[in-house]
Image (tube, rainbow, N blue to C red; front, side):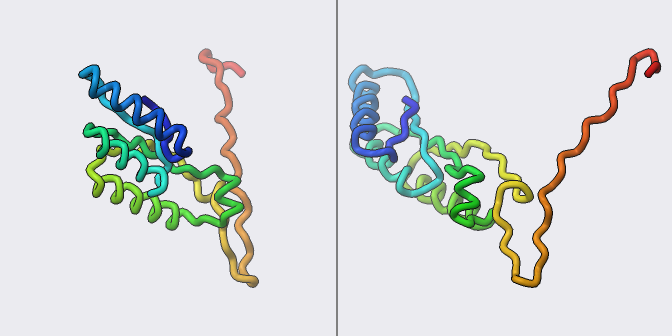
Length: 139
């Protein structure tokens, strides 16, 4: 039941119907829903779980693209703080939680704020691939 209830009422109704089917049909399956690491995405999962009476795992991910990070001027520390806050909320609501790994490269994707006298760092250059060597030692 991989749905995103934070997307709105229509999706929430679908998720609730699927969860009720799990209960009514006595299915031996575990329910889960996708959610950004934001309370607004997690709250509908908790509400549906409580109404239906089964645990619904919140499979959370950091909902941030490099473009959004740039546009919103999000720093890595702020993203981590907001994610931790959202996971604490989910756990406090009694939801099982999975935090899906998200790769964040602060040198490449996050906005670096600099004082007017600071010189911004250039983007990190990709490391060149090592040279290919013929197994016989010939070039």
